[in-house]
Length: 222
Image 1 (spheres, rainbow, N blue to C red):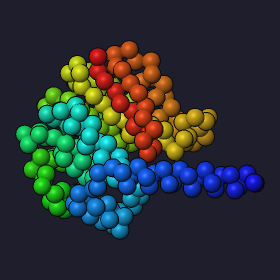
Image 2 (cartoon, rainbow, N blue to C red; image 1 turned 90 degrees about the vertical axis):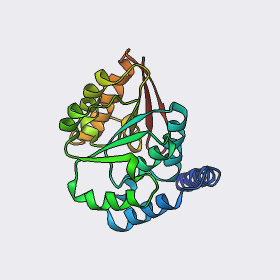
Image 3 (cartoon, rainbow, N blue to C red; image 1 turned 60 degrees about the horizontal axis):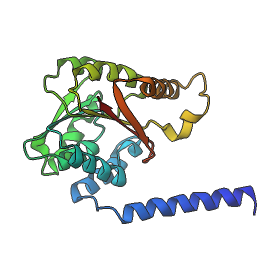
Image 4 (cartoon, rainbow, N blue to C red; image 1 turned 180 degrees about the vertical axis):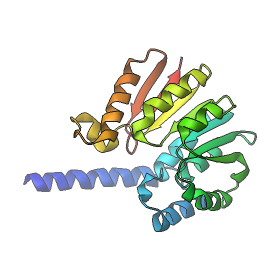
């Protein structure tokens, strides 16, 4: 068997495992199916949406943690915000921050398809400007915006969070690029490697990277 054949067999096996996981997890509700379809049709880089399995994980984590208020940094088209809202109690709320104001009408359209529109507030602007203005105490934060700014988001957020709060940082494996020396022009990979390293050494928190999709780091404030 040639190296190419071995690689193709490994890729096929990984895809079959991914398909098995998806087929044996809860189905997406119809509003998320439509969100993912509309995102694929109308938005650049649609794979940035969380997707089926990760979405079910986000909902399940919310069920487990039982937060009252969630902060999301990076709305994109609202898929993950809706997953968090699914797992919240009826009096829970999601504040979601999005820098791209051209997405505003599309995001509101996607939120309106669901039963959770009233539990999600969209804030438009730069997260570094918006975070200091936010008043609620968040029990759960999801970071899924500019990877070059993860450390800055984290440094702004951690002092504001209560003990026992969680941060979820998405894309921390970055297509596996974090395990190799990054290209000198690849600022996002460089920043993620630095963030992962700094987080590992931070004694104020407990942390673990889950190999879900593109890497999801769970952080617990001690």
